[in-house]
Image (tube, rainbow, N blue to C red; front, side):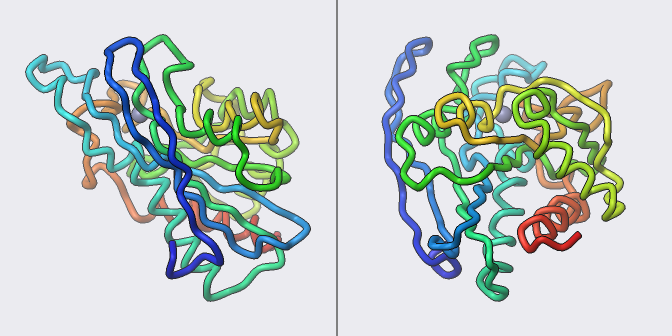
Length: 244
Ligand SMILES: [Zn+2]
């Protein structure tokens, strides 16, 4: 990010795991482009990967960390490429890219134990409040299917509609104009603690409704596709540059 952004810094914080015990030194990575522009948007993805694969059917594998090709790396990959595009094609819009840490340290059924980095970021906002935020998570699936995430639609309906309509105009087949699951992701703390209209672009059916590589040893690069990343990147670049 130092090679492309105007400013980059890290936001360190500590997370105490009250369920499993232990303390983690974590850091969000924050990179800003055109920070003095009037219009400001935030793009985010989590850069940590889950240290356990607790959805593994093989119990001997449940203590192994996941590779996280999709759950973690896919969103980061799209944003790294957008950073390169922003460097070579300066925009009138200000963009802050945040890589959140500690998204995936949570306990099943306890939403608050997830999304540590975005909770800390939103409670200790280190930048002026952006106009809106778009979070990417699990956008690399070869069989990419992106319905409108339900909490996004509830809390930022205008932004959700605008983004999915743009995807429709751009003929991006992964985007589905219907409502999908509710997912507690990094967008939730952003509107909850900082009142930033925020949406999540996520495909939770990985690879499809009848199987899920999520939080298993199967979350590996060959399950993902550059064409899927491209659809999401195309959408975001059109949004950032205001191309309809
Ligand atoms: Zn995860």
